Amino acid sequence: MSERYDFVDMAETGAAAVRTAFANQMLYCRANDAPITARVVAALGALLDKPASEFARRIADWKGAPLADALPLRAAGGIHALHLSGTAHELAPIYADAEDINDAAIVAGVVARHEAVLLPWLDGPPQTNEAGRSSNFIAAMLWLADRGLPPRFDCLEIGSSAGINLMIDRYHYDLGGVQVGPQPGAMAFTPDWRGDHPPQHAMAFAGLKGCDVAPVDLSDPAQALRLKAYIWPEHHIRFARMEAAIAAATEEPPHLIRANAADFVEAELARPQAAGTTRVLMHSIVWQYVPADQQARVTAAIEAAGARATAERPLAWIALEANRTVHHHELVVRHWPGGEAPRKLGHAHAHGAWIEWLG
Image (tube, rainbow, N blue to C red):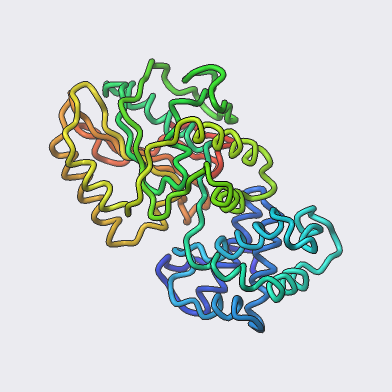
């Protein structure tokens, strides 16, 4: 496979787009410290040379946009689930990152033997919930408070998956020495902080509510296993975080509903907003999966609500999303009134390992 990214439109379809999606995903995994996942994606991509199974043929003949649909991660999630459940022991050497083995042959054999289990993994988008991303949200809220917005936040999240980032009020953060949240907290985050520390402010939450087209119930072991399958196996700390999130959600479930992004945002922004609160729309590594028509509706709804915002009832939009031109993730904020133009506050690791603060 190519050792460079091939740039294609996220909406591009067809056989060439499928191959590019797998090649790019492999390189993306390598760039984000996930060599094992890169090996699995590469082995799955090799199936496209001679699609000998229904699973491989369905991937090769994908009718949608493979990048927008995160097709490589759907397939890799199914393979990882077989490994986690102990169903396919022959995958163990790959997940042990062993050398001198034929990844493509091993994965092809697993697909042939477990095709009925794997096929449903192609039916829905991956769930990439990651608590470490919440550090970015907190840093952005501190920045908003420093701009004079009320530090009492009514948060709305789209693409919430299992609602792990809807429990951010239960976590503790050390952001370049700035301490936020209860101690010790259900989880504690100390990302490698690069640049000046964010401003220090007391902050509180008036509400935390989110939506997902396929919400995950962490108290259900089968659903929790599915979410774990989407965690890249190299990132051991993420499994520990997932167990902590399962415990927190079992104790008190996050406020999470089934809805698409546009319907949710339109309905929630129509609700009355209490004085002295900052309403926040937030999302992380999800915008690329939102259909273009819904992106337009979300943008229109928040800009219309922004036009009505006041100093007592301001609005903010916090996004941590991939910039596919420069291959890193950017923390971008808009706020109303007064900060309508997007402001880049930092660059960040996709799973919260580090933040480069520009704010």
